[in-house]
Length: 113
Length: 119
Image (cartoon, rainbow over all chains, first blue to last red):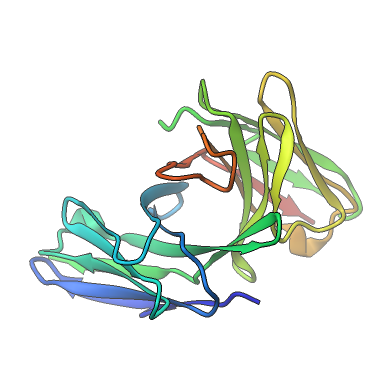
């Protein structure tokens, strides 16, 4: 069974600081997603990472994937209050002709002025 | 606004009942995905349909079923409801050119969700 672990689960940081959220998974996969969820809102797709060494950047967020280490990181640069949200990673596991998408528990990020 | 619509926004029902949740994808998107979010289980992928056919199955219970119609809207049917089925149900859509679970560079666009409360 594919297990996806995010850490930390809670992150409180000051504006202007940098930090990294980690997503570890237990089974071989070559596709990983990052999503954002604002409080009381729906989900928003942030990044799709498809191959080892993939790096994607959007604004102050940068995501990377190391399939050998089974690790993805979401790096936040010079955080601003608008980045406060819950961030989820999700990993695709292909089993035969079927796919499964397993989510981490999410990281609640609070950016304080 | 993602362009994905879900109805109803809220649904309150009793145990043992059956409900239907509806999702209309963005124009041009062939794939629809259903997700469940609850405090107990977190976010779970339920099922994906691509152009009317089931494409991938996640943690969907046997009491639940879904279909995608020729006009590409989708319905999620939940029957014999239990208290533990209370959750937010999201659908998402994508172009899914590859047909698989969010194919290469495929972005999912999420609807606002249906909040189901089972009493």
